[in-house]
Image 1: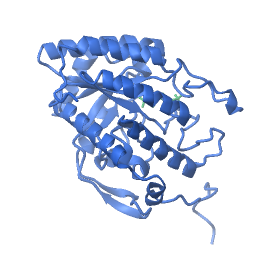
Image 2 (image 1 turned 45 degrees about the horizontal axis):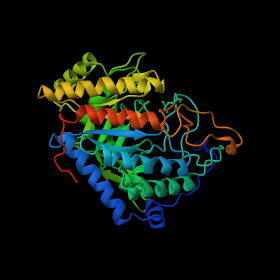
Image 3 (image 1 turned 120 degrees about the horizontal axis):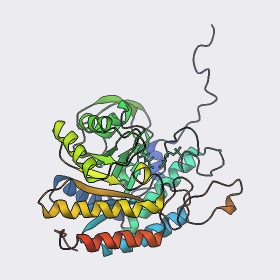
Image 4 (image 1 turned 90 degrees about the vertical axis):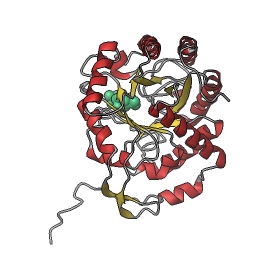
Length: 360
Ligand SMILES: O=C[C@H](O)[C@H](O)COP(=O)(O)O
Ligand SMILES: C=C(OP(=O)(O)O)C(=O)O
């Protein structure tokens, strides 16, 4: 018999099951509290019962857990300082969807040398998420691999479906079963349709193939996720955070009978991937939010910033000891001083307009 299958497969290497990885890095009480408190506040913001704004802020990708946790500790202090007006959620991205090729992130290749130790990456990603939550910060991530959430989902408070996958049925099905709110990004061409349709699709029940916690291939039946929302990230060569674009996004949500829950990503095509433009986008959006709230209206409920300790980005060197500490290896970020300035200015502008309903 001639072989007709697996012609392009070089190997199947068994992975530990989600249950095994959870046993190696168990969820702690402190981390569970951080995850649940984060999700609860996000849900209230999306329901309109908490007037604050959430900000997903952190590196484009995690590649160095030491620098990542250094960043998390700084962010926690800032989060406490601005808690009256904003919920800060740390961007903890381990999976990078590449335009063509490139490093696919810490889970896929934790040693950054094309050795693809995915088992090691998955365990270390879990350890990192546990530590961030134990610091007291909720975590946000992009869900790219459809079985990834079985390994990490208990440690995540907010999920993004990226511009390259909002149109994917697989990602919509997965989102319908996630326990956290999910932001769907507009397409890389700037169109909103795929993201709006994704919110509708993910809110419905689905049945699809996946794995269970014991790693067994399963029919997954989901209840639907009612916290899907739209993320404007610009595209097709132009930003879409301005008031006219936001009004068009509101109209698209109205047409689909969806609530006005919009997050603006200050990075990516909204700032032409130039980090020095992110503060301008943020400033404009904070003014829009203040104007909206004063007028008794509300559509921008969240923001995203790509930020790390050092500004800019760096290529991955062959000799990893040459890596610059705290600097992105994927998209360019604003530095820590700029991050503090952006968030403190936003807090000052929103005070008097927004009041924390549950001060600590
Ligand atoms: O945020 C990350 C990047 O914009 C995304 O992964 C695409 O990156 P690339 O165009 O460099 O591949
Ligand atoms: C890949 C990302 O964004 P987008 O899907 O908007 O390109 C990201 O936020 O890392």
